[in-house]
Length: 346
Image (tube, rainbow, N blue to C red; front, side, top):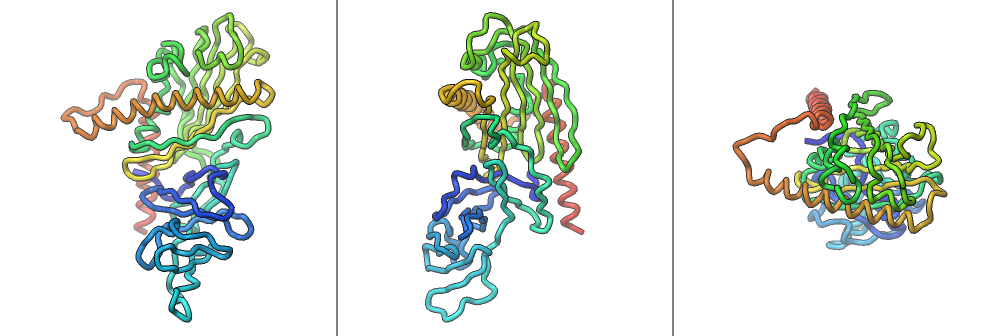
């Protein structure tokens, strides 16, 4: 279950070379990315119309893409301009193109009706490229459906157990009751999850910023938006400090997004930012390494969960109070998919 009329991240901007081809599959659709003569990123179906060989196995030319199988050439608008052995390429040979836009180092493609593409629907991934924040961009591939990863991100009680020795650090995270609101404004739909954890030890992850001789008040405040993007402020300050006192606080902003590759595999793009001036490049690298290690913990658990689900069971999963955010998000997604399907039938 996924939406078509929305933006999906297909790459970090640095992944798309200046004069070569880059390919990823999203929503069961192979897509080739390239840059035109002006340096703009273009997105085309990665399938030659002749024998459906991947165009990405061909070559990038100044005015288009050359298929590596039989040499058909298409321009950046998807029109076939050359068929070897023919004086003129047939006018009706085209390759599908996709609206594509780069925003703060994420490259987004629109997978639905081209005339419905609306840049106002792009998420506010500001910390990816803001000079006020420092990060290292990350990517991970999952051999699981993307909704299982959404579930994981929508229920942070797992931090106390899956990430006990890394991002979590205390069982109090699982005990804290989150506040959950629905978001339906400015073209964005999703849920906002707010979790405050008072008077807990600093997690090992925070030692990158210095030693803490007192407990912390921690917070996680994030929007989880359709189709699967997390934008989060998090951090911690010494217990007893006023909420406006950030002199000793750890402050973080994270942008993470999930893009279905196939029904059973997912692309995961992520970064965790800290304020510029708070630590050097070693801190940035340490944060990135800690994040990757923690996400490997997530992937190991979710992959094992998916193996169990594939084996089948006569018993349904047991819903609990901690599932409120993920159940609300799934209902929003289901409603949006139903609306999209109804419009397609009219």
